[in-house]
Length: 273
Length: 283
Image (cartoon, rainbow over all chains, first blue to last red; front, side, top):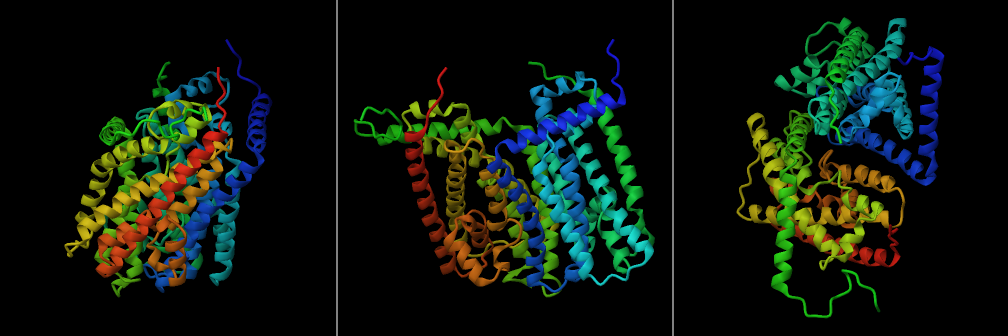
């Protein structure tokens, strides 16, 4: 019977995993630099897309450029940080297919933290920093009437967004326990969610908006907090207090993702060799 | 010269019929290979459809109450978006690392021993893959779009054939670009940098994120003439939605064909250089 390691021991093990990762990723220095630049590039182009679209129109779904940029900033900062911390879980299908997940299961450490630390993508730090910069600039230029409640919200909302996107990453990855080749299916919700949250939900229509905004909860990541920060009434008629619902929604998402993960791990059967 | 590689012309006169039969066989095997990845096809399809909705709503919002933006009306925008989501999988903008993987593992040595030029062999297989993608990845978004959005249906007789030529050129051109990106593995140990630059640039500069006509005109000219990217998606899509008069459509496809020839020639040249340089570790 193997004993569970003391908490300090587990922490040291995680630290060793992280250190090994950092060293191996920095080994090919030129590649690492290109990787860092390339990663920030995709996020830069996402934000540029919004600017280009505002180059040909004055407003989008009833929102000006400055207002939309607050939404973009909240979405980008939250997604990029969640992608840095948890995004690598999207490699789970490969671990399941190759049987590497077996090795993870037999070690006396948590499965989820191991998977995340086994390939923590340090190159994505650039993306998270850029996302945060967009948020800061957007908040600075939006002419927000700062109150103590709004200051609290501007701290809490991005954190809730990180938890929410992290939960989406984990929950969608668990699909691969049942359906091995599901990689792209997860993209529809993770990257799809990122694109969805980067625009006011008034842009979308019909059942598609209902599904993504309220069924999956993406409206609470950036749209409703942005309305609360800007002091704008929701054109769709929800009360202003909904802007503060982000943390609650994020906690529900995290609980669902954790449940999905546990069910998935229990369901896992090795592909064998 | 004692070197035996596929790119050194064989001494006997090439048999055109035999060559064509080989090409067809490789194309067929490429088609069948991708037909076996059924789960992945369905998963990719769902993603394309979701992004179809996302991009379509955003571009329609950009058109706003006026109903037109950058020379596109609402129907043209909808057609542009939904066909782009299908075309993306046909030209296979992202996710092809086969050649780089084979170079890294040394398996590429087997490709060099075959009596078919590697560029030709990979192109033939890629055309088979594209043929499969037209049926499985392009048709569904093209059929789903009109269920939810008003789309533009081409009205000129010339548009159909021009679009077909344009898509074929885009597939070959995109293959050539991917081949070049993969071929950096002959010189670099880690191609992830080159791959990520390609991924980042190709999406936005091909017109996937927004129609390139949204950009200032001087920048459009620079992109079209100076880079192959607009020829990958934007040109076939502009041809299909009839954004320009027939003369401009023809000129755009001509430019696309010119880029295809240039890039394919570059592929052969790079392959030739690489073979002189390549050392496969035996064992």
